[in-house]
Amino acid sequence: MKKIVTVLSIFIILMGCAKEQQQVDYTEVSFTVNRSLLSNEYISKEAEISFSPPINWKPISPQLLSSIKENVKASKDTADVAILPLNVFMDMESSFTCFLSIFNSSSRAEQTITYYLNELRTSNENYQTNEGSFSHNGFDFHQLIFTKDELITIKLIATNSEDKIFMIDYILPAKAYENELRSIESSIGTIKEI
Image (cartoon, rainbow, N blue to C red; front, side, top):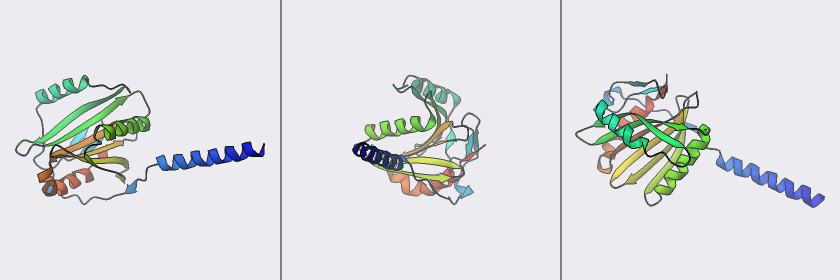
């Protein structure tokens, strides 16, 4: 009986440690927002957020957005997670792109995010990836930055107060990253719930 209690105690302690390791530390981060580096505020009723894309990153045409939505619709994965693009902003001269999307899933938000991040890590394991988390304006963000084919992607994933998952991707050529970083940070600093 004493052995069973000891084994159960060890098991409970290990489970507690495993749970602690799964918890993400969301350090509060404040961003200095330089409005001169930003385009006009965009309000998304679907994602229930607003933000300002970097300057000169304009919404694409409704026809192009519709085409992107049709292409994405066919890519629903086995976990019943669909990513639905809401809008795309581009700097046509420099090929900078920002996607705002929401997740459509039958699973709980945190399970969906965990699954998506694991899939993303697996599919990008051969690329340089930096991962972190932070809190800002009431959101707990999961952040991935990876370099692939001379492009850098900054991917931010969070949930709003209604547990709706949204994602913002900033994609730009690696050679332009340092010059655009302040405007991207300013853009991130404007993300807020509506």
